[in-house]
Image (cartoon, rainbow, N blue to C red; front, side):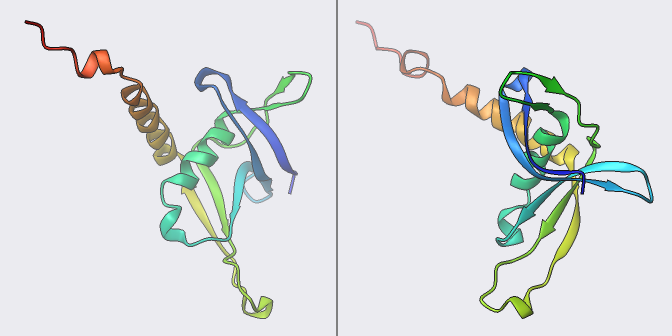
Amino acid sequence: MLDTEKFTVQDHIKVGGTYDRRVFDTKTERTFIADLKTGKLTHLATKTPAQVAVYAAGVHYDLDGEREEHGAERGLGLLIHLPWTEKPEEAVCDVRWLDLRVGRKAITEAMRVERFRKLTIAQTMPHVKD
Protein backbone atom coordinates (compact mmCIF):
# COMPACT_ATOMS: atom_id res chain seq x y z
CA MET A 1 0.00 0.00 0.00
CA LEU A 2 1.57 3.27 -1.11
CA ASP A 3 -1.14 5.63 0.11
CA THR A 4 -4.86 6.04 0.69
CA GLU A 5 -7.53 8.67 0.14
CA LYS A 6 -5.55 11.00 -2.12
CA PHE A 7 -7.37 13.63 -4.16
CA THR A 8 -6.73 13.58 -7.92
CA VAL A 9 -7.88 15.75 -10.79
CA GLN A 10 -8.15 15.50 -14.55
CA ASP A 11 -8.08 19.09 -15.71
CA HIS A 12 -9.01 18.43 -19.36
CA ILE A 13 -12.38 16.89 -18.40
CA LYS A 14 -12.81 18.99 -15.23
CA VAL A 15 -13.25 15.99 -12.91
CA GLY A 16 -11.68 15.16 -9.59
CA GLY A 17 -12.08 12.67 -6.81
CA THR A 18 -10.39 10.69 -4.08
CA TYR A 19 -9.18 7.18 -4.71
CA ASP A 20 -9.29 4.57 -1.96
CA ARG A 21 -5.86 2.98 -2.37
CA ARG A 22 -2.73 3.16 -4.49
CA VAL A 23 -0.88 -0.12 -4.38
CA PHE A 24 2.47 -1.37 -5.64
CA ASP A 25 2.83 -4.90 -7.02
CA THR A 26 6.32 -6.06 -6.05
CA LYS A 27 6.26 -8.90 -8.60
CA THR A 28 5.61 -6.70 -11.63
CA GLU A 29 6.87 -3.43 -10.11
CA ARG A 30 3.69 -1.72 -11.29
CA THR A 31 1.44 0.69 -9.40
CA PHE A 32 -2.35 0.42 -9.50
CA ILE A 33 -5.30 2.43 -8.24
CA ALA A 34 -7.60 0.23 -6.15
CA ASP A 35 -11.19 0.94 -5.20
CA LEU A 36 -12.89 -0.68 -2.22
CA LYS A 37 -16.57 -1.53 -2.68
CA THR A 38 -19.03 -3.12 -0.27
CA GLY A 39 -22.09 -3.28 -2.55
CA LYS A 40 -23.25 -5.77 -5.17
CA LEU A 41 -21.01 -6.32 -8.17
CA THR A 42 -23.92 -6.07 -10.61
CA HIS A 43 -24.20 -2.35 -9.87
CA LEU A 44 -20.49 -1.73 -10.37
CA ALA A 45 -19.80 -3.13 -13.86
CA THR A 46 -19.27 0.21 -15.62
CA LYS A 47 -19.31 2.70 -12.75
CA THR A 48 -16.19 1.42 -11.01
CA PRO A 49 -13.95 1.12 -14.11
CA ALA A 50 -14.96 4.68 -15.05
CA GLN A 51 -14.27 5.97 -11.55
CA VAL A 52 -10.86 4.29 -11.33
CA ALA A 53 -9.98 5.38 -14.89
CA VAL A 54 -10.44 9.01 -13.78
CA TYR A 55 -8.12 8.51 -10.80
CA ALA A 56 -5.54 6.54 -12.78
CA ALA A 57 -5.28 9.16 -15.54
CA GLY A 58 -5.38 12.06 -13.10
CA VAL A 59 -2.70 13.69 -10.99
CA HIS A 60 -2.46 14.28 -7.26
CA TYR A 61 -3.80 17.71 -6.33
CA ASP A 62 -3.33 19.56 -3.04
CA LEU A 63 -5.03 22.58 -1.48
CA ASP A 64 -2.30 24.88 -2.82
CA GLY A 65 -3.19 23.79 -6.35
CA GLU A 66 0.00 21.78 -6.81
CA ARG A 67 -0.21 18.80 -9.15
CA GLU A 68 2.00 15.73 -9.05
CA GLU A 69 2.08 12.54 -11.14
CA HIS A 70 1.33 9.40 -9.14
CA GLY A 71 2.66 6.82 -11.61
CA ALA A 72 -0.34 4.46 -11.59
CA GLU A 73 -1.13 2.19 -14.52
CA ARG A 74 -3.74 3.63 -16.88
CA GLY A 75 -4.89 0.39 -18.49
CA LEU A 76 -5.65 -1.67 -15.39
CA GLY A 77 -6.97 -0.96 -11.93
CA LEU A 78 -8.16 -3.06 -9.03
CA LEU A 79 -11.51 -3.63 -7.40
CA ILE A 80 -11.37 -4.80 -3.80
CA HIS A 81 -14.84 -6.21 -3.29
CA LEU A 82 -15.70 -6.75 0.37
CA PRO A 83 -19.48 -7.08 0.64
CA TRP A 84 -20.87 -5.85 3.92
CA THR A 85 -22.16 -8.54 6.26
CA GLU A 86 -23.73 -8.64 9.71
CA LYS A 87 -21.30 -11.41 10.66
CA PRO A 88 -17.66 -10.35 10.12
CA GLU A 89 -16.50 -13.97 10.38
CA GLU A 90 -18.44 -14.67 7.18
CA ALA A 91 -16.85 -11.81 5.24
CA VAL A 92 -15.22 -12.76 1.94
CA CYS A 93 -12.90 -10.42 0.04
CA ASP A 94 -12.61 -10.75 -3.74
CA VAL A 95 -9.98 -8.82 -5.73
CA ARG A 96 -10.64 -8.25 -9.44
CA TRP A 97 -8.90 -6.49 -12.28
CA LEU A 98 -10.64 -3.47 -13.80
CA ASP A 99 -10.29 -2.81 -17.51
CA LEU A 100 -9.83 0.95 -17.53
CA ARG A 101 -10.33 1.09 -21.32
CA VAL A 102 -13.97 0.23 -20.57
CA GLY A 103 -13.96 2.98 -17.96
CA ARG A 104 -12.68 5.56 -20.43
CA LYS A 105 -15.37 4.53 -22.93
CA ALA A 106 -17.99 4.99 -20.21
CA ILE A 107 -16.62 8.45 -19.42
CA THR A 108 -16.66 9.44 -23.10
CA GLU A 109 -20.26 8.25 -23.41
CA ALA A 110 -21.31 10.09 -20.25
CA MET A 111 -19.75 13.31 -21.56
CA ARG A 112 -21.62 12.87 -24.88
CA VAL A 113 -24.91 12.38 -23.02
CA GLU A 114 -24.20 15.43 -20.85
CA ARG A 115 -23.68 17.60 -23.95
CA PHE A 116 -26.94 16.22 -25.37
CA ARG A 117 -28.82 16.99 -22.15
CA LYS A 118 -27.73 20.63 -22.36
CA LEU A 119 -29.68 21.23 -25.56
CA THR A 120 -32.11 24.07 -25.07
CA ILE A 121 -35.85 24.24 -25.70
CA ALA A 122 -35.16 26.60 -28.60
CA GLN A 123 -32.90 23.96 -30.17
CA THR A 124 -35.30 21.04 -29.77
CA MET A 125 -38.78 22.65 -29.87
CA PRO A 126 -38.82 25.78 -32.01
CA HIS A 127 -42.04 27.74 -32.26
CA VAL A 128 -44.31 27.12 -35.22
CA LYS A 129 -44.52 30.33 -37.20
CA ASP A 130 -47.66 31.58 -38.99
